[in-house]
Length: 198
Ligand SMILES: [Zn+2]
Image 1: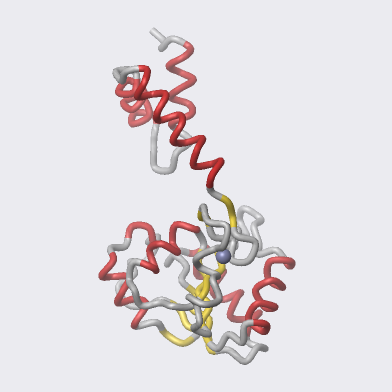
Image 2: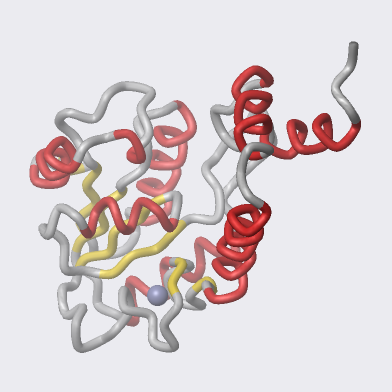
């Protein structure tokens, strides 16, 4: 017998989350249905409130709730280094190493020829302009060690080589095919320190 429609609907929404398959979505759905209504209201509020309060920085594309982006704050961020990541979440991962004092750029997307995804011309120009305007000396490409991450890193190296910057990429310890999200703080610390010149 099929689940009632409201459960099917809930499962379909939960399945949209990364790494959540049908079985796990069903488990979560039934778990949520055990919650009190007030708890569900609080969960719904937390999700909507995050979406309302957080915004993307016009400069770095990071996600935060301050009027001045803490990652682009000129006084706090004096270093002439630019770190390119693929998710706002990865900024926080790099920050947790306490090794980096430069600025960030969050790419809107990684390159995937199969899915016809490329870095937009406009975004590339924004990165180049920022390197020049801020007199950036080093660009650290901190992308996932995946095919898409590799393709994007190569593309960026090609595009940025005309500029007077050294380009490096995270190295040691990053598992092949792995995302920065699942790398522990210590490994990321090593990867950042052991970055290799591209
Ligand atoms: Zn910013």
